[in-house]
Image 1 (tube, rainbow over the protein chains, first blue to last red):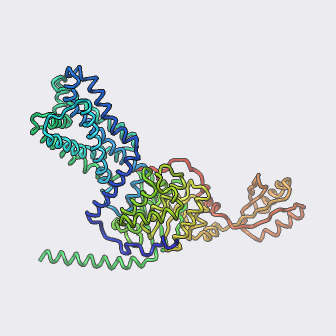
Image 2: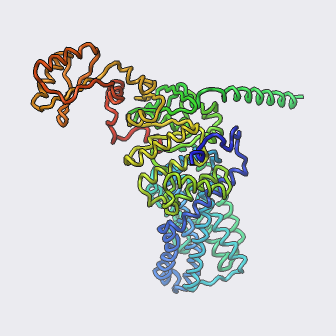
Image 3: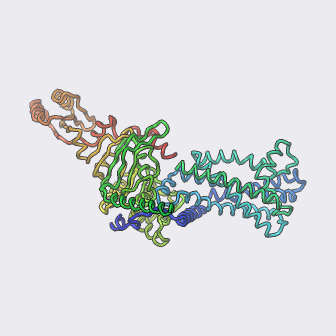
Length: 272
Length: 353
């Protein structure tokens, strides 16, 4: 009994000088495992993750459908790709909130007192979130099809559409991570995050055609990455010329990642 | 030519480093800090702290809230960088060799930092895996520690459902997964009931018996008195006294006389008598009817006894005892140990940063 706690006989008698990058990746996977384990226990999150797209779809299809497109079915074909983008973009807020909770509850203090890669907790959280985005995409697409949405492009194109969404979400969540590390409480992260996300999401052609908007708003809509992503999704799911918009979406994705990932890591290192 | 020269310099540096490391491992101190300074904005949390902990012993870092205890621990455990000064754990610099230091230490913070969304078992498996144990080893170690901390029954439940004491025990178990050589315990028993507190104390003793070095912060003098081989009293970011508990008690250079008359009616007379003899107003406890006063000269005692006898006062108790750590603390810091418990301290802000 007593010998179980003896310090002598510690595995590392002479501690290792540094951790290999492979070791860092292993740390990240352990932490991914951690966030996946928590997912089924975090019912609120799972609920909001899967119910929000359903509510969006129902509301938008039946409230706006008639007014914007003349028929709910026609509108669904137009709006579902937009709702996909919206759900995924809003789901990225979870990354920041969970990171913030980990920092404020002291869980990250424990991680930082361990000989693991400094970036592993961030990477682990984000790998774990990829699963959340897949759920969000699956629920939106599945429920949309129940409501009558039809994929008109090839299955390959549709799969590419889902992949593009996932990649975009994995870039956006670094922005969320940045807010999560900078702000004081999970509530603040949520409030501030949505404040920034709303104009980004709704100031686009996600729910209405660009042509119906006033000129000054069109100017914003036309540079908004969400617009490009929505158009790319429309092209990949319901057919149409995809080449230009997919490239622009990918460029935006890369841009967001290149700017916010280093900022988030830097802020994380500073705060912790 | 240039490359060869660079390689030679590099080898030489590596060699000299490993020599100095060997020397460092011979040092008798498991923890050594020199001149630690830390500021948070305008608040100075540490104003030049020196600390040494002998290998295999317990150092109690004692001080009121906001004294800088947590900040000091966070620097030693590589969570914070000092603005000035340096610290070594087992000879490794906490800033330059942070990765090595982290392989040697365990940390239990002031607030139990367990993952509330995970079960007790999974919390410990996660730490084990992060420390490089195999799946099997991590699970075995988790089971072993849960059993030791009487958490086996709750092992499968989420930590969110644990009581405060259980959570603290899980936190402690988490800091032991890697069999640390140096253990930092930041107020390990704050908020625990007496039973859990005794459990934690037993654990600490057991680990010290096994050769672990412990640095624990506490506001409870009794805790320091019970566990620590050495005590460092810290206040306003400075170490104001060090020594063994006995040395500190002796250092205050005084003893306390306690007199309890049988009849409550005599309390006032005893108090007046002591005041006249010792030259200072004694303290009177209304509940027990005990009159106590500091005594600097033991030769006054026989006279006091004679006078009490002459006044025909019957005594229940007449005792001379050493000053308690409480009184030492009061003398040193000018405030009792358990004041200002509710004010938010700069340490707290620091830990949230």
